[in-house]
Image (cartoon, rainbow, N blue to C red):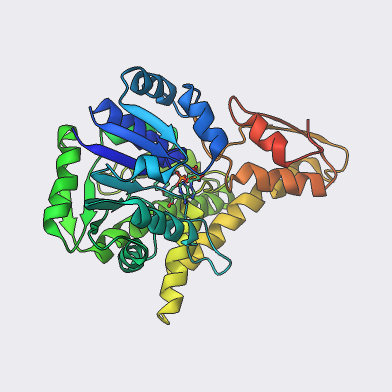
Length: 366
Ligand SMILES: NC(=O)c1ccc[n+]([C@@H]2O[C@H](COP(=O)([O-])OP(=O)(O)OC[C@H]3O[C@@H](n4cnc5c(N)ncnc54)[C@H](O)[C@@H]3O)[C@@H](O)[C@H]2O)c1
């Protein structure tokens, strides 16, 4: 049993891992700066919707394997491992904004005692392991040491708990192979293949994977557009393509384009890293462009069928960026709502779990 601190333990990734590590028998302290989330979680109430999460949360609390705090002094000094799971939203140029990582690493450094293995699960720009190491040591005591391991995360919202317990692979990047081995041991009960590599390659696996999946979505959306003009049924086309094992059926569903907190920001961030190195990321730019067109085509189609949208009533079924989550970050529905309101339509919306989040940021809809 290890003592594990999860920084950002109230978020989609951090909370799912906090409950999962508790379920695997570890002593977990989940730390978040959001006091409201910490208060709710301490009482067994889940501030986000994710299937299966609340049950595991309650079990972890009942078994005394899981606690929540806003205080680094409570979470860090006794931790063998500190998992950093804070957000890395897109900055103005598309580059990932790493300020939360920086603050978290400095705070871990300030409160750590002895040796701590710091595991970075957040999606971070290539090379971040260096500034994380520097931030950890900036305010650390002289007898404090760290090993830093990059451990990108691949869970999907809506299936997060299943994904954590049945991962396709565990990717670990570190210059300290012994530390990477210790992190690998935490995952051993899951029986997944482990790839240990250098930190930069590990960080890149995450960006390249998300960019590839986003590319599949934009690809099928472009094919959908061509199918519509030529009288082919894109659903049948996607089904037929997916039967080829080399292609696979996943991420070939045409629609309003991808959204969510990862694909758009990670594709932009990878493109921005390429630009920083004076490289042309032609394919990534096209993926984003096609995605914007996929959003816009929903309203174009409505206009084609209904004419002027002024005064029409349009219902939108589903607001989150995909089923089984309440996450509305960069959800295509928000873009469609905005366009419909601008065109003067009466917009009525529904969603099993994301309604409150949309009501909090958009007015003038039913
Ligand atoms: N959401 C996903 O499906 C997913 C999947 C794979 C990877 N990721 C990556 O994981 C990271 C986290 O994503 P998320 O969706 O869980 O974000 P999130 O916004 O849901 O959670 C981040 C949490 O960190 C907390 N936080 C911020 N600064 C902190 C600090 N200094 N100390 C302690 N807590 C702090 C926030 O209050 C928040 O609760 C991102 O880098 C993201 O790209 C996300």
